[in-house]
Length: 295
Image 1 (cartoon, rainbow, N blue to C red):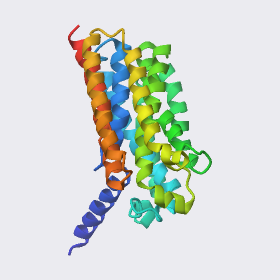
Image 2 (image 1 turned 120 degrees about the vertical axis):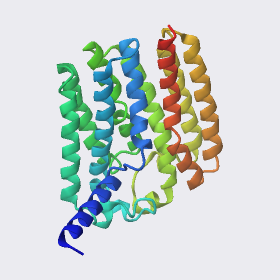
Image 3 (image 1 turned 45 degrees about the horizontal axis):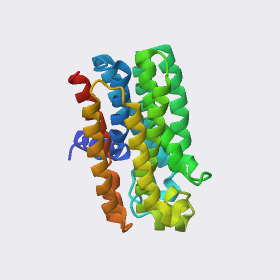
């Protein structure tokens, strides 16, 4: 093998490790961020927000979710080695160093910030708050009994930023949508935490699945229902409420399906429920877009 071939192989291997670190092969994570953010853009703009903002928030969402994965894996590297699902993550195994992961995360966050700089001053200010919550979340599980609520704030920050980018302000409607979205995050991330409950109990991590105990399934269902109810109220003044309510009905059908997946609390069912949640967000987003398109 030539030296250049070895270098190329090493580069390809490193890129593959970085792709694994940012969960490139698992888009469900950034889709969970993307749909509520784009929904907020459409609501704030009363229709298509323009290609510039659509590009900024789509790319920014992917970049910040990827940066968050880097920070999360560095913070959790000692815990992850004791959890079946995360034991082979690149930072946990040492295939990617802590320094490399942090550099990659910082680079991705800076690229996202560069996109924010093309919006307005209010959105730039909000981006610092979003970054602070993103950095705080990985450490929340050490101190907070419901760290999923902290993730809910982090995963909902695209909503006020979207309104700010369109309207240069964050009205009450944005906070209402954010509150509903926080409940959705609490629902699906508790499903996620149910997958690792046995491992987390053994190593002493705090999660909503552990805190709620046997109330986990009922609380998840309530969070789904309140999330959909809040968004239904917030979207009542949409251009075509009938379309929105069709989307809400389809979303409720998905909630029933999620119940069938998690009611026995099996690892497989809970993980499948978590991975399919982005379809619920997409359903509401599609309803908003269709509603505006038909006005």
